[in-house]
Image (cartoon, rainbow, N blue to C red; front, side, top):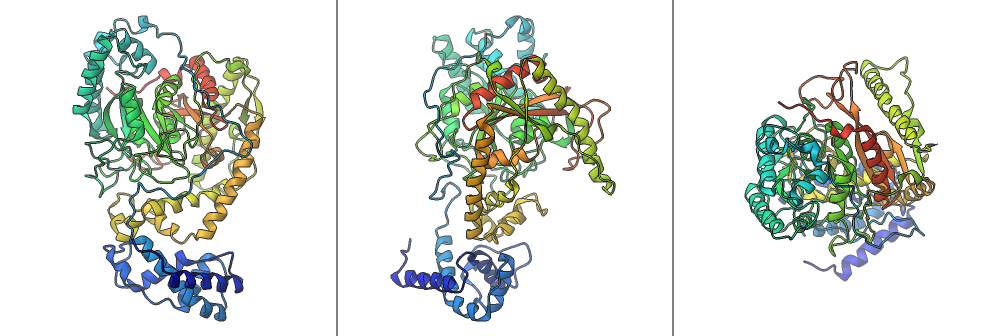
Length: 628
């Protein structure tokens, strides 16, 4: 590593002084200019392929014309005199960028800053208390089905909740080994149809199951996850197995560590049986092997990026799974597959050992068959680990007996209102609006159920704030996390190469200036304040699972619980496209809808308590697809 010389420091200071004097102190454009100069030097390189990574040594001389092009991208004007003044400083700045690139930092290196979503004056609950589960499962409901389930002749055991399975394992009516073999068999049986597994961890799982049964028989019962088989989204490192990130070019990547959440679930006695699929580098449901499918309609993708986790849970092929969310990657596949997802507050669960996409937005959470299942898993994985410095000393105390009738509950009014169809709307737009309006009958019915549960719902509106305009922060962080992938041209190996896929998005992000990134983060501080005001009057806010709230809460860190809310009827509008695997092949007859419960920062326990009560009142989480 080379230290910065006093000469280069002096040059940098002169450059900053020149820019300030020239009236450019508010907008620098090195990223765009640097990219343009590299492109100039690589004139012979085919479009879409940056080379082998060594070409960074051959930079074109920065010219006034390059400054004009970069200034146009940055949205500023630079006079001829200013361009002459800037040339020396820009050349020096480019050398600094080259030196940083030469460090070849792996994805695991985080920036030297920590995003904190907690607004000024907020007080967090830090006292940890023992979990309080619901009453033991009614074993009579599974009586007669247990043996058949173990033998593979019945689905009842496969679709049982963690709470139910835990009681059966604890009382030794079902062994961890029987559950493990049953779920492994189902994974093998349905993976050719659903494509939800990247790697089976069978050897590890059988050893864990044997140990679990031995411990339970000797009286050492670790808790409700002991002996329960689960799946890990394949961006979580597991020692001895590939961690592929779902991306071509990374198929054989192995880390000699376990992610913190994997270690914690090992300690809880859970049994890892599979690394589940994710869209390449945590985008969508298209990975290097196939497109992961929804078990409700196998011509439809399962959505993403926690594609395999949601699909496997919904298909009764694991007891639970872990997913991650940056901007909808738990919420969307949980909705598409009819699973229950819990996206925790930013900074509740450590991400050590997980692929980084956005250091200020990534979150790890459970995807399960019930809300209480999610709460039991979250109880095992949350809290500081001494490595992920973003994790707060906040407590999650699950209490199934919490008096949810005393909670202050609102609902996003506009999310439950029909959208008019413009007279000049195109056919595709008409289809989307018609489908959304059809789904509203399930959403409005949910409000009536909640009112019937003696919940006094109050209408509320989202703050008027440009949340969506902050999203380029995510794209810039992702471009930094995969900087060398873009520069080397290996991004051409990724399966998705459309304008909305990561390769193009990361290239575009390179023209987002550092100044604009900082400005967006300042706007994010304002957004945190706006959302804090919203939740000052509510413990829980009920909404549909898409819309502005999804962007806003991911940017400002609030938790969400996504629950199944019924199955579309035969009268449901058909998808915009019925082409196999098409991104527009969503919805339609016989597919699930969902409902989302939002809460204030680190208010997961209250949100989950109300969401669980809703599940118990409706029973939608008991519905499951018929896979044959």
